[in-house]
Length: 214
Image (cartoon, rainbow, N blue to C red; front, top):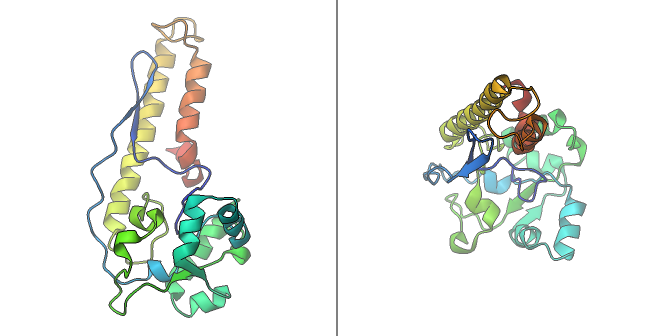
């Protein structure tokens, strides 16, 4: 499942909290290794978090990523048509859609790329869209079952969970050390409420994956 131009996408950068209450973003982790099995299933079962009408509207409004996506991917006429080609991925995506409040499983559009070669390779590799270059964009992206990136996605999920837990722990430590329970222990111009809001904004992309319980 490609999640380009989704409202909030988990970031690749690492976010930490300094002793002075500042949120620090450090460089992204090393590039994802080439773990692709070259099966072509993700190319034959692409979908987005937006309904097809929204994607076409974005393209008409000049959204470059939407235009690039529709330049390469063609919509299946129905979910059943996609299921006939990639049944296991269609079922997985529909399960994800059923768990999300912002998606309607009955209105999910699946797309296929007609540039996939019989060997499962990309026929336009050098000019493929960014969503293809970035896939999987994070550990929760719905890649086909048995995808070569399964292990990497597990490690990425654990990395991001650890980062969120560290942020929360650091915030609790600062709150416990506060002299008045209202301001930062050493920077009285920083309120704990403001700090909490800034942290909450940073972890917002992960909330749909259960970050509030990490």
